[in-house]
Image (cartoon, rainbow, N blue to C red):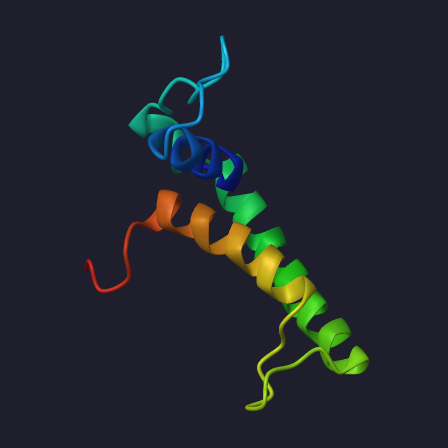
Length: 93
């Protein structure tokens, strides 16, 4: 579920009035989770995460331990979400 959908769901669960027509889209069929296009996107997101980490380090956007925390966090979160869809949880083998 996308971050916006999670926030919407949390707000409704907390008592906010639902918006007519809003909500979660149709589930993605299993056969569309691991396709050449999703694999390509995952590879590109992982490359973008590496580039973003380099930018974060240049700008000093790091945690005390040196972990990049800026663009790399947001792009990395997208990459991880897609990786989970495509490959499933780590250690599943």
